[in-house]
Length: 404
Image 1: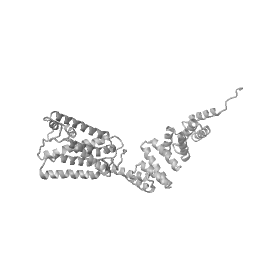
Image 2: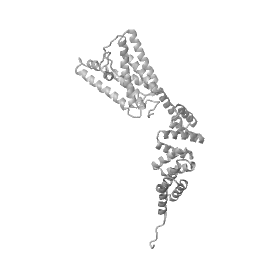
Image 3: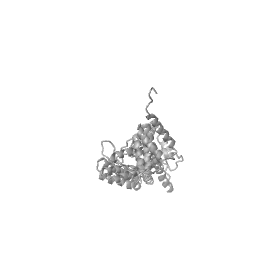
């Protein structure tokens, strides 16, 4: 999940897609307003008729262009406000591409559906539909499923308003307007049906993509992190276990539980969760993260009985990262714990090589290389180990006297 605060709608990074949509709407509206001043008899109706959406629209691009036309400042300002309030946070959470998919798919479907109903009923409307309301309604519907606990701040000076409360007010207003128009026969209900269609599509798309589950996981993790930061270990353990029940392969939950159980004095539970977390990192090929976690946890608990394959992977990664002392110790730990494992041969040779070259402990290097030759007399790397021992002995020999 991305770095979005799931409790308050406060994106930490610039929402490029949201800014681009708002900017494009403002520019197009500005151009239309200028043309309307220049030739009020022709504009803006000719633009609305050509690029808006009607029951008999033949140009497929009108399914896109109608979203960027607005009738007046109030229409534009209201849409852009809701796009910013709900779009910026959603974009940061799900990414720009998925956000744009939600926006445009909701706009297209919300534009097609009401007109399809009208045509099926034999009512062909020539009045163009314009505005991004249906697309934004889809964003709101998607947001309502993904961030059901979110609070939205309109300004920094205001307290967060529950997002679902705003959504409820929005829906109530839409339904009220539809019922009023149907009862009084005033105006066309198509724009309002467009809003509801977009909203329902946003909910449906979020459900298909399992966003409620993703959101629940984010809230569980947020609650667990808060307990950890407050230093309440028992409460933190309870919350992180809830995270694991929701997402059994959540490596951060395993590491946080390992840390909490270590501080509570339960070494077996701490090690068990640490190993599970390391297995997940290995599965995801996050080797440097594995090495850092290993060093961090070793400082906390000391003895870490990692399985041989994980310990060898950590040792090699530490060596690649330039942590030569830590790598040598990890190789030594592997040789001592698992003398008969498949990784032990290379671990012993690598430890001897590190002591000889990088660490500079020739005595320990020769001891490890000699043990390597004794344990693995038929190794394909035997000649390499023998040459390294000869180099150590040559460098250790005293220089000859000048008279010799």
